[in-house]
Image (cartoon, rainbow, N blue to C red; front, side, top):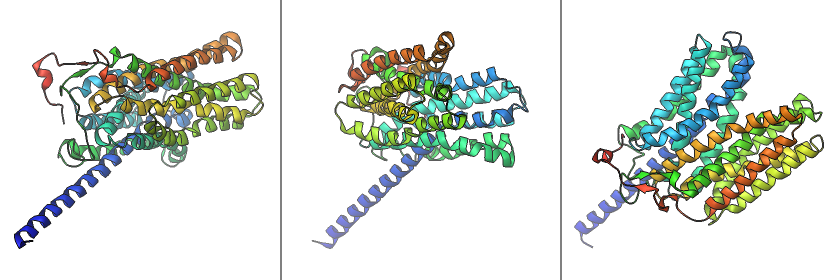
Length: 436
């Protein structure tokens, strides 16, 4: 080979190596960005409950207002899910991730310095709305940057969400004892600032991760500015009901499992342990289910497993709550296996990250709205009947809906292939490139 040919080949190899290194760096930054955002998405929810007694010494926070505060997450997650896709048609997922984290950080900072109850609630609402939009953004981010690693990245980010749910209540009281409840509540805003940094580079500097060259990012097929209308797809409705009924049952047990256990004669500590068992099983489930679903053509077996576990746990808690309570709590804790399944199906049943974003917003918007009714109706039925039989019957009906919805959405198909789901932009102005 001539000297010139050798130099040319060396240059090509160097270019390939440089490109490979840049892609790897982009992948790592994108993964870090997704996981940091995921960790922040429940901090505003779980950092306050351990501190309500201390907060009420400074702010007016009666029991009924604490109840409203407890309903805010699902309500605002549902509203954010329905509204966010409209922004996604104009903004890139990177720009939207930044906006979500800004809102979450500002909201948490506002309630940390709030001089009045209503400003505290307003700050909470802003933070939760930002986090609700963040819930919607994560699936299309995974679809865009890791189209060949959807199962793995979904498993990782859902697990990190679980960690972000568990850590704040553990740190809330020690930090409050050392520096006051305002520092304890407001310090989580710093994490939102950190979560902005990876996406700020993508949005402003066009650095890694980039929307076209890093981490195997994908673009939507067909008309680039087509409007995605998931409500026209029976499969999208099935996905929303799968997500919603799973969340409904999960939040109902979060609210009432300690009361069921205490009513069966367990001490307050033992009743709290049952809730810890129920919620703690979310970590291994989050790791296993998305990886398994990504390998199955039809993952309905996961739905059947989740429904069977819910049924077994409910029967035990209803008929023999004081006997083998840990077994019933464990079975019920395995039931929400359909939650990470619903999240991974958002990407497995869509062709592009834009369709993923629209379906994510629709499924989570409808789903969290449905979930709001779980704790409320279970409690009303208990108060009306003096027992838990009617509440478990209500939850049993939702499990039938969950199973049917799971059967529909688990069948191999793409939501964006359904008639009427994709529509061309109406106006030339709709072709404006998204912000970022």
